[in-house]
Each structure stands twice: as structure tokens, then as C-alpha cells.
Image 1: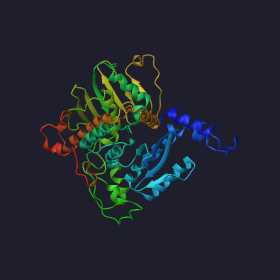
Image 2: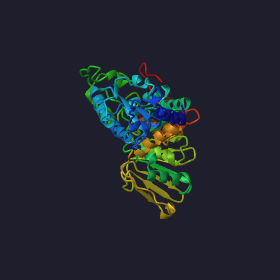
Image 3: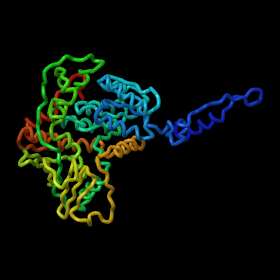
Image 4: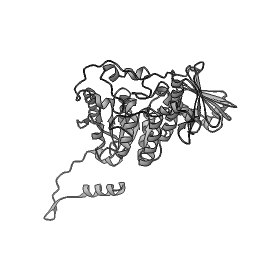
Length: 432
């Protein structure tokens, strides 16, 4: 039913009375103002019904950003931890003013609900790609935290899945919706800095650690902590509380075959993503060199260099990026500030300073795209290219030598070792 038709039907309903013997004998019908879109409320026809998968740590912040939006109706949460399911349900119920938020241990049950339009995926990195593709196949849009993939193969399958299913996908690369980062990327992308020669990313450390195997501990009851579901597509290993609490993730562990995607990826999925935006979201670099003096230099087909650098430059906060052209340069960071080689680059514009990398604008971009069906700023194709660049850099780090990547075939050229690291074996039934 169209919005216009729905409005006409509601008007007719409100005007309907029950008459007896020609006299109006009407029973009072009480309809909450929220159902009619009054008092600032959004009518049901304009609401986006959302469910959450893995809402802890970063996901708790994301949840707050969703609940701030008046057109969001959060109705369900899934988590492998019983305690967390209850905690998140309480937050949602308190916000909604009822006790109707449903909880699930298996995210597939949440996805089976026909009333849910969109999903917030904020699990650990091990689950992001698998959960996102399962969500797309269930016919739902999604906001997915980063890193969104663990390897090159997942990145390609993710982008292809979103294209085939026509779902709206927003990676949690929220800096794409912050004005100072957007302005810096615009200067680089539109030639305002001259021919672009170098783009610098600061991934906060470059390590290629393998996943750990910690001693076995007594495994909890599945209703308390579903360890098998926590492992999901990752290779089996015995339960250990440190792995459950993110020990492996915090140490940068988890290259191929683990819970993470390697040392460069965690912050690289932000700062390399911005570099990709600065070069026009073109395919990723074709050459990656082993690190030297704290730098890893990659090269695009155009000749522009992407430089992974361990140390920052001008103190502009976390996630600093720098873009250099033949006639100028620009830097930006999480302080909300930008620094330019010349004030003339502003061209009379005022760039709003928003520090602290909030996700509210990014969530709003996603919700607007759910309604309009346009591509959001952190769409799957953009995320795919940025993640491939990070994964390829991780492989060069791990092998300690140069690797060359062919974007036409998505393989490393004449390099069997590197090609074996493009993917990993996945446990049943989670093969993509």
C-alpha cells in the first residue's frame, strides 16, 4: 500500500462510526498519537525496523546512535552471551518504554523475522563478512562494523553478494561522513593539490601475527556462552576465556585462519579507506613492498604511492592521513582539524570541525539510503577495495617481501605463496 493510500485508509477509519436506528452510537476509539505521527513521533509507515547481532563494546555505541534516530524501531537482539543479551534488551526496552525486545542466541532466527528491515552487525571481526552475506541473502539491509572481511576472497564475495542482492550495505567507516575528512579527500580527488603523488595512512602499528592457541578451559553451557557459535567460520579451538574476551583481537593476532584479519587491518580499514577515497575509490594498489624504516610502500596503477606509516605527522589525533600532490598537501585527523599547505585551498569555505569520530552521521547516511536505495558512503565496493589493500599489505608483511597484485584476476602475479593467503578454510556450515 502506498503512503497516500495508507493515509486515506486511516482517515476513513477515524471517521467511521457505528450507527443504530439512524443515530450515531459510536464506541470511543483511542489511538496513540505516536501511531499517527503526532508530537514529533514518526508514523509506522516511515519507521525502519532494526535488529542487532553481537551488540557489545563498539556495538553498544552503535546501538546508541541508532536509538537516537526517531525513525528507528529496534525490536530484537542476538548474542552468543546470555548476560549480554539481557543487558542489551534492557537498554532497548527502556528506550522503547516496553518489554518487547526479543532475544536470540542464533542470528539466523533473528533474520527469519519478516518484520525486520535492517540489521546492525557488531560482532567480532571473525563474523562480520559471514553475518553480512547471510543478512543480505535474507533480504535485509545492514550496517556492519569494520573490519568487514578477514581476507581478499571474503572481500570480493561480499561486494558481489551486495550487488546481486541489491542490499544497502554500510561499513562502519564513519570518517567518510565527517566534514573535515570529506574535504581533505575532495581536495585530493578533484586535483586541487595538483597531480596526486602520495597518500599516507597511519595504521597504528604494522605486525603480521598469527592466531594463538591457548590452553583449554571448561566450556560453559551453550545457553550462557555458545562457544561453537562464537567460533563460527573460524577453525576450531578449545574454549579459553581470554579468546572470548578479545585477547587475540587486542594483540593484533588473527592473520589467515583466526578471529581477525591481521595487524594492519584494524585501523587500516579506516585510514586506508580514506586514502582510497582520496584516489577516487579506484581499484587497490598493484604493488606492495616489504616494510623499511617503519614504512610500507604500495603503488597504484597510476603511479600514486600509498604509504603505510607507523608514526604520525602533525599532531591531529588518531587516524591521521596525509595527501600530497605536485602543488600542495593536506592532513586530517580525529581532532576534527585539517592542516593545509596553503590557506588558498579553502577557497573561502568553512569546514566544520567535529572531533572524536562520532558515528551518528554515518548511521543517518545508512538509514537515509535504506529509504532511497542509493549507495551509502561506506558501500560494499568501497570497503572491498580498501580491505584488499590492507590484506595485500598484510601478506607482504607476513612474507617479508614484495608482492604484485593483478586487479583484473584478483590474484598475485606468479606468486603461489601469496595466492594461498588470499582465503582460508571455513568450518561447516559457514562456507561462503
